[in-house]
Length: 332
Image (cartoon, rainbow, N blue to C red; front, top):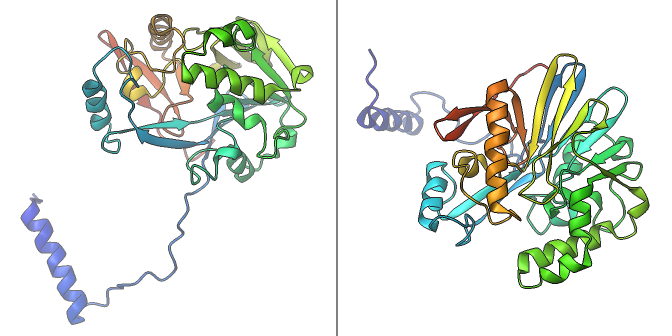
């Protein structure tokens, strides 16, 4: 039996170093080629029946944890959860993952990410959807439908390029009717002036969709909004927040959008309320309903804020849940 302990490991490292110095063995001390200095493209394909689906990584943002990132617990508990997930000390990391669904008749992009306007200011951390679509061999002009789960900036801002033109010029833009009514209401915008975050959300919707009214189709819950894609009511995060069931043949996945923000916090602790929720109590109720359903069905679940490639299963764990990420499949 091999006994690996710290003394053996350091002794082995010292021996290797000595061999390199004395020339006992020809060990390369310099790389043969320059380091790449850049990440690989972020896209991952998976099948749902005859549909070919692609998880498109828009990046991930790490930022100092605000005092009320989780609004209904002490910050120390949230920091402990971040430490347990090995996030950078004192920070929280949030990934972003739009989904591309090729039904055979329609090419549907579910959510658009943070937008290329955020690519340079974030030093490439977010706003990567277009470059990853290109790496996946997808021309933005070929996308038929941009299907939005809700109207928060990290889901909508990818609609436009940095110069304000449309990133997906031939796409019909579909939005949940309840979210559209809420975020385009001047009355609601007026009531939100006391909250800087909500004030910015309303302003962003106005800016993003200015002049696009003729391209926008408003959809209801419980309807087939594109071939094989059915909208599911999951309110709370926003009034019209929507998830989707993608079904082909006898196969189905649930695209949960933002039923939970990062699962290390809000799937593991479904009664925690993230600062971004419009109605925290309703979002909590929605999480339990959605994850109870997903666990009972043993459904594949795709999360916008899950770690890339963002595909997994949800299991009940007492009054909580745990996410079991799906293994990377080298074939489609």
